[in-house]
Length: 53
Image (cartoon, rainbow, N blue to C red; front, side, top):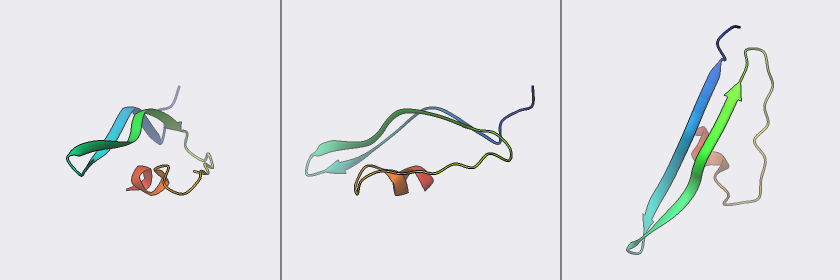
């Protein structure tokens, strides 16, 4: 089997906010195969831009 174009396992990201931690991504798993089309969708503030950065 060919290797995926992108393979992410257990990705988490958080930001400090007012002395607390704000989690924006938690244990994300994502696999994208070569030639596959992917859409990242969701409401405002759910981490779409954070994921792509």
